[in-house]
Length: 478
Image 1: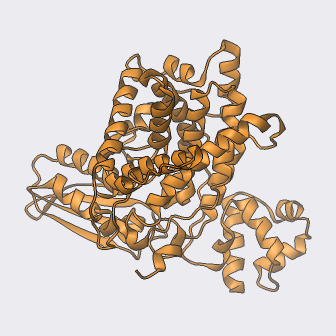
Image 2: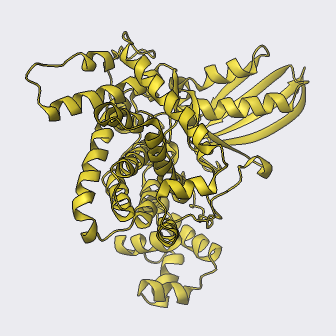
Image 3: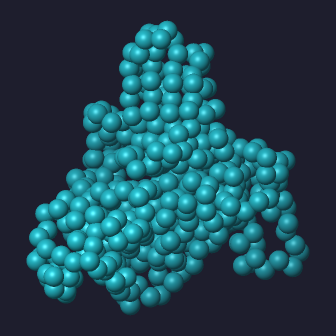
């Protein structure tokens, strides 16, 4: 172990262009201590290793494992993509494991019209949970009627550019025509190696909430108005279609029953929750029951492979529509008002997507359910007409109290605990808004800082807790 730690310290120091003297100064130790570590004559203390991990931006367990890569330093973003790239109407159960691969297969098939057979290799989370999510079924369906050989490579992890990586090969007979590497990075978005032109334009030039708040305050804008001035003129029409799709998924779910696919024998519960009204039911209990019913409705449709809206992902698609639908039913908000709230939520989702991640395979469930809760809190703040500072605080609270949440679905299916998490996060978003409306003037942490903390926390989470079906609840036998 001493030799391995020494080798990694040397490699990290040289990779980052840091001298022994500079490193010793940063750590508050002598030059000789650094030299001794690198020559295997002594070993750093746990506190030293913790400081080294912070300096070199690697998880602490990197020093003890051969399977953990050096974390790539995140390049400063040059803006944010359109809300159209965040909110996508598609089929579940997973934006990164079904919608993303579906998009990649459509691209590859159209790029190779002369191909008569295909081969796909799935790596990382796609390999480990692909069967549970139906990744293989989606790939075969899109590439049909041509045959496709699918391989699940669960061994290669150290050289992957992203946990959701897939290699695609197109053949004519036995002759290789083309091959690409695709990363499904969350929310249905795919990045194709060597195809920069496929990346959507970053139309938002501001990429921190601090800058957005200053812009809105200077021009007396609501957050949704900032989105409207930045997006294409048809954005509100697109968002209206998004809202209609969200409502449709709730209504379908509330009228559905039976068993979810996948073999866990999980019963659909949205319809049951809706029907559990009692004559002496309190207003608070009714609110909880209905919001949970709506969240279950969407999440169960997602788990069944039905049509939903990524908000920001399939696995977290029930949180935002549940709260918006309840508020519209209770207080009569117009569809236009809901659309403005969804645009506000979209800016928050975009900030997280740009500066951290919305991928469970990259940063755990905090990146999915935590992001959805923050988006919902912001949307609710807009509906209530809260000041931009209170909207920021509500979103910050929502993320802060999901930090470290693991992505560990049983059998790799987006069912347990995913469906219940959508309902719990919907209620937590309401709590975040209520708290923010009273205490925004006392807060100490900005939204930008907590998003950065989400990214750091996600990278420090061990792989078994990031959509690999190898840790946490996923290890339970049912």
